[in-house]
Amino acid sequence: MDFQLKTLTAHEAASTEADALILLWPDAGDGGDAAQADPLTLWARQALAEGDLKAEPGQWLAAHRLPGVRPRRVVLVRCGDGSAPRVRQAVSAAFGALKGGSPVRRLVLQLGALPPLAVRSAVLAVAEASYRYTTTLSEPQPRALAAVTVGVANREGVQSTFDEAVATVRGQELAKEWANRPANHATPSDLAEAAKALQGRGIAVEVLGPKEVAKLGMGAFLAVAQGSDQPLRFIVLHYRGAAKSVAPVVLVGKGITFDTGGISLKPAADMDEMKFDMGGAASVLGTFEALAHLRPALNVVGLIPACENMPGGRAVKPGDVVRSLSGQTIEILNTDAEGRLILCDALTYAQRFQPRAVIDIATLTGACVIALGQVRSGLFANDDELARALLEAGDAAADPCWRMPLDEEYGEALKSSFADVANVGGRAAGAVTAAKFLQRFVKDVPWAHLDIAGTAWKSGKDKGATGRPVPLLVRYLLDEAARAQTQGQPDRSTRPSKRSRRAAH
Figure 1 (spheres, rainbow, N blue to C red):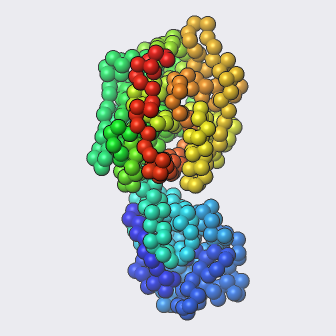
Figure 2: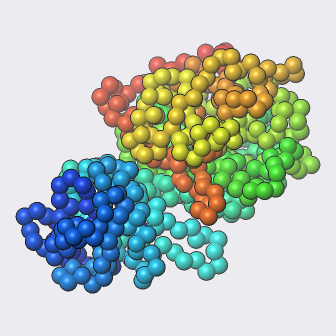
Figure 3: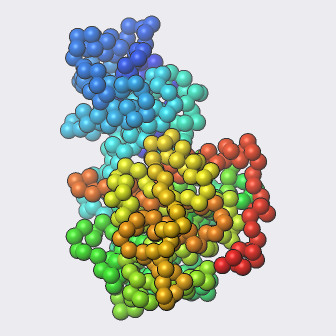
């Protein structure tokens, strides 16, 4: 889908060649052109004056072949105070009004003088409302909408926010595509090919297979993968937007392309949704797609440990003890707590880049869904400044998270008589003990863990991937690039040496 940003008056929007026009009307001010008496604005004002359109956000009024208006269909929709949430609500409602008629291939979205964050919200809402998954359909009905012209009062004032929104859409839709694919169309090898497709545009990709991973000593990752016929892949992405000496942000995405639970087999009901268990990996791919469009002055590394968790004859068993890359031994009490096993080796690997920060993203625990539902992702962090930055980025991107505790006492549940640590700590505070497990593998590096089990996909009639937390990650990385420009880029020499990190383990 092609997005274009133009400076348009309501009259100019009404004169644009398109199949449909959506005109957002805020409570304050005038959604049209106060100094002009064009047909579109006159129609809207008359409808409002006569009470044909209620004031509540999302209320709409539609017209067909409005005299003096070039687009065939027009939807006037109220957007309340013009804030980002109300604009998203309004655009979604307007798309509902356009359903059922002839396909809309070209759309004009007239926003007028709404603020930049409202413009961003509108672009994301258009993408969300028009998204279609088609890859495995025999007779796919592709997205009808091909071109969107976004009309604003002053293009220059919102251009950078618009560019971020479009890049976020590109990344979010790539994440949705791979998370939505059935597991037989999204194997670890397929994910590696998707990563390779990102090469160029400042991105380099390296893919390691089972032999390389074994040589590294990633025993926890290997243990999860050993029950599947699908070979594991360890995907390493590099986005270089700053000097090579500048310490990168490292994103680590859980890539369980299908999770049966292994020997600790999951119930059959809803197990199909475990194709979404690589939502963290998909979000890393999507974030790198956005980086390729935006090109911020920042270095970013993406790590994706990808494998299946299957109950084969070689599968890891409850009670098995494995040695992780860090050297720590792990007693695997529950094979369905596999995400933390592949992540712990990736987190140890991340430290070789001497990063400024490490963020892992994972559909990790059902406990987080119970705690936070589908609204906010769970945020755990060992660094207050990193936590604050992620919270602010999530709020700004309408992709919110909520900080959870990491008290030392929670780690007591992970004690084992047969290994350095157990991979589960019981039902109580399950999301927290999972995070405490991961924390053992980051030591002094600023680290955050995003548990997206409740936000990465929807169930029921709207079943499908959300592409979260791509918006949060993109906003955080842009903010981080801006901070680096202001405060100076941290050099890798400010991070501990490889020798000291190995000694710490």
